[in-house]
Structure formats: C-alpha cells, structure tokens
Length: 398
Image (cartoon, rainbow, N blue to C red):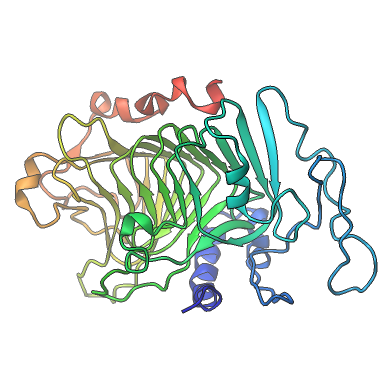
C-alpha cells in the first residue's frame, strides 16, 4: 500500500480524532481542523496536509524567487506573501534555515535542511517548516546537536512516512522521524506513521512515528499520530508539553526519563461492545531493566480519552516505572489499570503509581495489587521539571 492510499485510509480516524478534540476543547482554533487536514490533489499527484503558506524568503533570507502559479498561468509569484521578517537573520548564537515543499525556501525537504547543519555545531539551528505534509523519513544523527524543528501548528504541519517493523527490519528502525542528537527541540509540528492500522495478531505491524534517542529533548505543541508503538521515547531526558499523542497498543514506549505535562493521550483502539471485558490497548510500555536506572514516565495534568478498553501501562521490562498525577481518565481505562506483562514475578519490581487523578477511569478500587497510591511525599519528585533536571537544559531556563 502506498503513502497516498495509506493517508486516505487514515482520513476517517483522523477526522474522528479531531472531532473529539474539538468536543473536548471548545476552542475556535479547532474549527479549522477539518480545513487544515483537507486532502488536495496537486499536478504531481502528491498529497499534503493543509494549504501551505504561499510565502518565501530566498537563500540569502532576502531574495524571493518568482514562481509562476501552477493554476493561474500568470507571472505572479506563489511566494510573494511570505510574512516579513520570518525567519530573522542568523546571529552569533542562532542559525535559521527554511523548508517549503513548493520550493519557496532554502530547502524542499526536512532531511536536506538537517543535512545542511554543520556537524557538532554549538549554535542552535532553527529549521522553520512551512505548512504542509512532508512525505519523507527524517534522521537526525548524533553529529547534529542543537537543532530546533519549528512548524506552523501540529494540525497543519507534519512529517510522515509509513515504515513498519517488518519493512524496516525492526520496530526501532520504523520511525518516520528518528532523533539521535542531543538538545533537540520540536515545536508546533506533527510526526505521523501512515502504515495501516494493524488487525489483531498481525506480526511486524509496529509503526513508530517518532523515535527520540538523544538526551535533553523537548517537544512543545506537537502531535504524534500512529497506532501500535506511536512514540518511541527511547532513552535520555525528555520533556513533552501541550502535546497530542494518539495510538492503540503501547503507544508511548521506551526507557527514557520523561515528563509529560498537559498532554492529550488518545486511544484509537476499537470500541469494546457493552458487556465484553476484553483489553485491546495500553498507553505505556516502559522498559526500565534494573533498579539502578533512573528512568520512567511521569504524566502530570494530562487527559486520557478515545476508544477501546485499555491499560495505563504494561511492564515491558521487569523494573518498568510510570506515574500518573492530576490526570483525567475516561472510562476506557480498565478497572485493574495495569498489567505485569503476564509475568507475576515483575509485581515486586515494577513501580506504577497514581496520585489525585479524576474521571470515571481513575477509580483505584479495583486496581491491581502492585499499584501504588502515592502520597504527597512519594509523588513530589515526579511533578515538575526537576524530575528530568530541566533547570540544567530546558530552553526556558537558558
């Protein structure tokens, strides 16, 4: 199945997801969501999200090339109305690059912009990405630290590919975007894996949208779209703020030490008919392998909704650690809440905690015996950016 047909197959679930987003968040911004995700046929038969800005700056950040509009036949430029002053000129501490799929910027692909960043640069490079969907697989190697990828909103700018564990020779390599460099920042952009949503028992169907393996990474206002294994929060210290994360099975997994604040976690597992008790999904699968590892996922002031009957987490590795605090949980959360990966020996070593959560899925009355109902002292280390040493590296502290 090609990218175009994969994207078409996702239109209905995407529309449903964003319809639910609007119902949860009655904000006028979301009235534009269906427009933003309109599929448009271009002469090249490519597809994209949203109507891209018809703006530009040239390679010297001043000259704007005149491109004839493909439909009008006139000599006017499709790049003339680029907002003035964006991006600003490079400085001693910051460099700027621009990506536009119509050719109105320095680059037409995100990977080309990443490749242009000097190796081991101590300057921050901000890659400004115009609205649209960029069908490409993007790798940010260890040699490219200090990169910021900045879109125009997670409902209008996206990087998408469609690898699976089978096609990529392993789940870890299936990510549409894979970041191995340190000090990576992403803002206002989505990462998507457009592989078909797998049926029950399908092997090799794991499909990662984002793999983040570098230390000190932050994501603000970003979207992560996929089904099984959407977000590979692999290793390092990471911060997710105001993000939208969609999936079905283990859709946040890895062995990182990460804080998720004010994020929306949305299950796209199949609805479970009334009266049935089956489980068809899980939010997290944390992979801590020993007590010596200072890793774990902390979710603070988040919301969990969508479809299915799912667990908050399952113990991918014996010392899995996950905490939910001040989080609103819908009734899709199974009463038992957690799963030990069907290995009772892990019950003594995993750390699953809940604190002051709300909603019909937050009742701890029927939770598994090994879940911890945290008190104020126990939960305190997980509640803010000190959990990830954020004062040492987050952009807001610089």
